[in-house]
Amino acid sequence: MIHIKDLTKEYKSKKNTVIGVDHVNLDIKKGEVFGIVGYSGAGKSSLLRCINLLERPTSGQVEVNGSDLTKLNGKELRKARLKIGMIFQHFYLISQKTVAENIAFALKAASTPKEKIKSRVSELLEMVGLTDKRDVFPAQLSGGQKQRVGIARALANDPAVLLCDEATSALDPNTTLAILRLLKKINKELNITIVLITHEMNVVKEICDRMAVMQDGRIIEEGDVYDIFSKPQTELTKEFISSVVSFDVPKSILDACKGSVVKVLFRGDVAGEGVISDTIQLFEVSGNFLRGSIEYIQERPLGLFLMEIQGQPDNISRAITYMESRGAQVEVIENGL
Amino acid sequence: MGFDFQHMIELLPDITLAFNQTLYMIGIALSVSLIIGLPLGIILFTTDRGLFLENRFVKTTLGFIVNMVRSVPFIILLVALIPLTKLIVGSTIGPAAASVSLSVAAIPFFARIVETSLREIDKGVIEAAVAVGATPWMIIKDVLLPEAKSSIIQGITLTIISLVAYSAMAGVVGGGGIGDLAIRFGYYRYDNTIMIVTVVILIVLVQLIQLLGDWTSKAIDKR
Ligand SMILES: Nc1ncnc2c1ncn2[C@@H]1O[C@H](COP(=O)(O)OP(=O)(O)O)[C@@H](O)[C@H]1O
Ligand SMILES: [Mg+2]
Image (cartoon, rainbow over all chains, first blue to last red; front, side):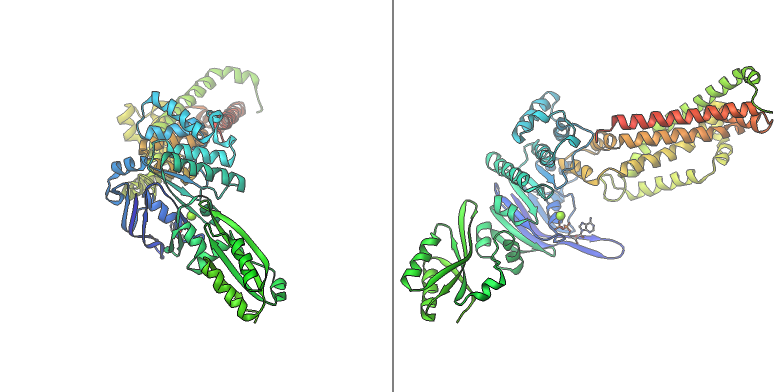
């Protein structure tokens, strides 16, 4: 659906050149929700804005829905943009126009006949749950409602792709969740490919199928969200994951541990607790949970436990080998021996 | 010599005529500056760097011309434009003739005001419209003008008030008007009655325009 080839975006000024995106290659499949995470300044917005050519790439190609956008003239580009919706952190609605007029604006851009605009606006308002706000001005809406109008506007012309630039970053946690659910629903029901950028790993965990991590304009890690959560490769990715699933334990507690402290991770359907209780019985060790949780990513469980194992050193290492043989990933944090 | 009520009554026809002349000159100059200055301001803004009609040549050329006209003192413009005035109005004297110079001065003034008003719009809103696939004309009509409407009305108020002040100098080419009356009678002939009456009229006029402008600008703003 979206093919980005060797894309570079530089911002030149008289004094210096800032690199926003640095030789990025990325393929996003039809119908998936793709998340790009990174800290502020990593180049996420620059990359996203190159997908609908709000920023013209310095070099490289952007192919969306089969056409190379960098080669289109003004009129062709406008036509291509009708099929690429975009929503923003700060919504960017026309403040002097009502909700209905804001949505109608997008329909007018596609030369929709007047009599069709009214019914399509109603349809869109229903989809985002704002039927009663039709003639209200944006100033009278809450943040979440404004973003719903933004979504309705973005979906007006049946786009194939929806680009989301920190779409939930200005919203409170509950509203964020509601907007994310709406996006997921749109993705499922209308089969719209969604690309979202965020600095919050929670957002990715909630709705993305695949993800990429960006740093200094480059993509440093990319893959299935579940895989990345269970096997992060880079320090930065681990840092992002720890904001969602944390293993921090007070130092005094760790210091008081006499045995080995291990981090145990169970993927998918492996019944973590069962494996741990089997292990404890089989190897005559005692286990002491320090921290643990089961996260659901793409509706698959991911069990993560931090525990202290006490017993004979031989038994401890056999216990670890046993757990690994049953599908756990075990990492020894502190060897109490 | 203080204020003489009888004297004021005597001069009432003169005052009325002057008042009408002022309205006439301001009306013409304002209309012309709206018709030409508004599009000019829009072009100055939209051809700027990073905007949807970015065009360096147009931007710098128009910007240069606008600055040039604005840097000429009005009294000099009034004299310098006599040939142009003759061409357009067929005469170089009277309120119609003065309107030409007033218009020429008001166009760049108002254009810059429009440009500044448009600059206050959040760039993100314009970008969102570009991302939707809207044409430049649609963006101007449905985003720029509605979003800047309130601020442009304030600008129109400012333009009218500046025109009231400038029109006082129209006397140089026999334009007449309230300001001219104040200068000819009040200043040159030490006629305090006329001086007081005209100044009061000007104060009331400016206050009313400002009040009306503020009220309208607030009333139409949906923020
Ligand atoms: N219009 C611009 N002009 C100059 N530099 C820019 C511009 N937009 C972004 N940058 C720079 O490019 C880099 C990436 O920015 P951005 O894409 O906004 O990152 P992110 O969205 O991840 O916070 C930053 O160093 C930023 O300062
Ligand atoms: Mg950003």
